[in-house]
Image (cartoon, rainbow, N blue to C red; front, side, top):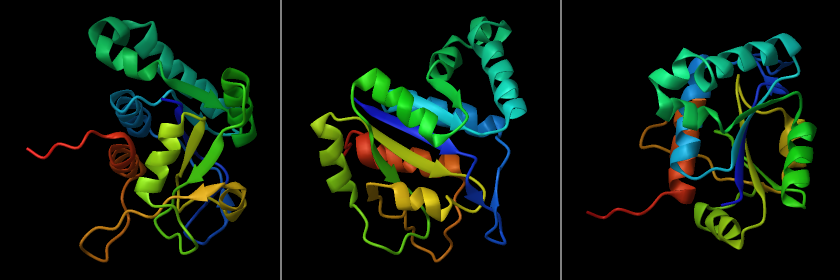
Length: 187
């Protein structure tokens, strides 16, 4: 599959809808990497412009890829091999374009998208075409409008049975990957 996932820590909003850089969490790295491996994602990018945050991510990855964690939990090592820190969305797009020979289509997610959106079945059709697809997830209080405006498509939001709609990003990633690339199991 030619599907890539990026978790953007910038540009995202805070509660007051100001653009900020959010901090990464260890749980997001591990859980999203594990979901990415489970569903056949090509690469999982962690995007932050902060050099010290990228260095900390590299140190954490080193523990699980080469350090004690790599021998203690080899299955975690395998998942974390998919993780690539990046300074910007433009850097991620450039990496994918270099690796795949073409620019990826950008698919954004949001809990509150109100504009025209792509259904999950339409998104699965795009995946099946084999062209590179980059699914963008945001942290904080969501992706900044400038990122949403760059998107080729907007994926329909996850809707549960209640009006409550504030999932953790790692839960949202797992649900969306399952809807897009999971096997249907009726029994």
